[in-house]
Picture 1 (tube, rainbow, N blue to C red):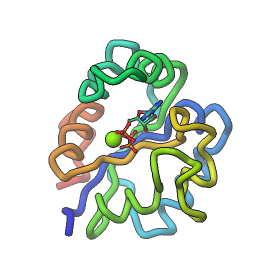
Picture 2 (cartoon, protein in one colour):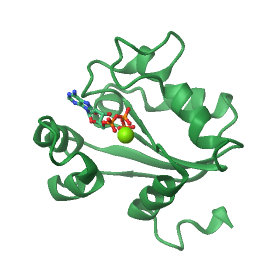
Picture 3 (cartoon, rainbow, N blue to C red):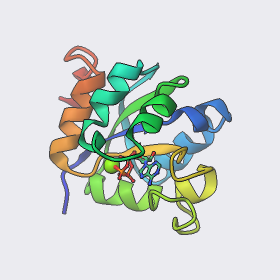
Picture 4 (tube, helix red, strand yellow):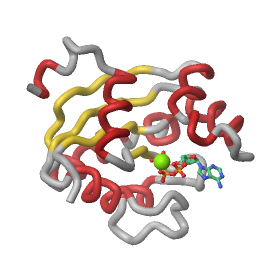
Length: 142
Ligand code: ATP
Ligand code: MG
């Protein structure tokens, strides 16, 4: 069982397609509470830092181009068993593999432009939330 906090981003494709509201509605209906939220945009360098774990992968450069191509919405979410339940809700990385009813099944257009991010561990949820939000902005987490 994971902890009660996760971090997500509505990625540039989903924001540009006007799907942010629909995606946030699903997230809230599934019992996640929004603890912090902002509309922002990653620079190429910031995208590279966020996905540094993938820097040796062949898709890294394209991933950084894509993630910095337009606005994103960064969100800290709270729910019991947040990491595991959220990864289930977003579905597989490749939308072709994502089960029906998952956010990626509904909104992703490719393995790269896959609509949404979800933290993969409690430790990364903390690191990723801190990447986007100041202590003041995380006030409501206390
Ligand atoms: P995320 O970390 O964004 O929640 P994930 O954990 O499902 O996604 P990762 O393996 O961490 O998948 O990959 C990070 C992101 O890199 C993916 O969400 C996708 O945008 C991109 N990506 C992953 N694999 C590929 C690939 N084979 N080709 C192109 N892009 C990819
Ligand atoms: Mg990942």
